[in-house]
Image (tube, rainbow, N blue to C red; front, side):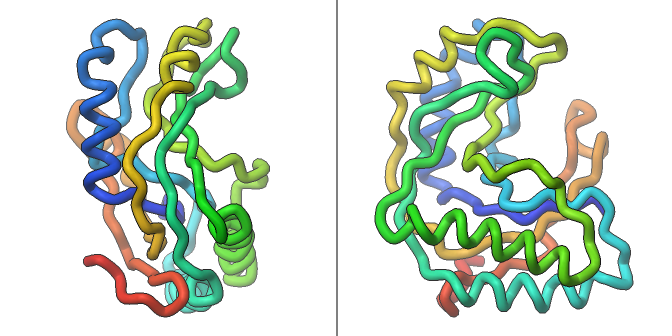
Length: 193
């Protein structure tokens, strides 16, 4: 199974970002991420064996309970690998204390949980971001990064993480279809679902 562990912004935060981007979407050579797919990936798990799923769920729950909730907002932006030859345009995440400490620890904790469950984790360094769009061919996107630098969405409380299964090509227009497998409250809080 192809899966990821994600921090999911509030519906209000996603709606605000969507409203900001909507009038600008026609001006870009980007394949935009559907608003219902907006998330911040903490760990990408390309190949999860069914037999390891129960252990993964248990370990992710423990990792989430070790972290406390924090306030965040989608703000700023950037591009991967860089603005001159971008393949991905993204929005950043601004966090308030204790989030400056909790967010990286949360990412480390969920990655460690997956590794202890015997699941390989994408080894890239954690860079908190929300993917907005992808380019088919690398290109210059400095105008998008400048635009996103002025964006700051509403604050929301990061209080849960989700384990999501990704079914490539099974969604509308050949996009992925995401299925939330489980959710884990931070610090023992109650999930929003």
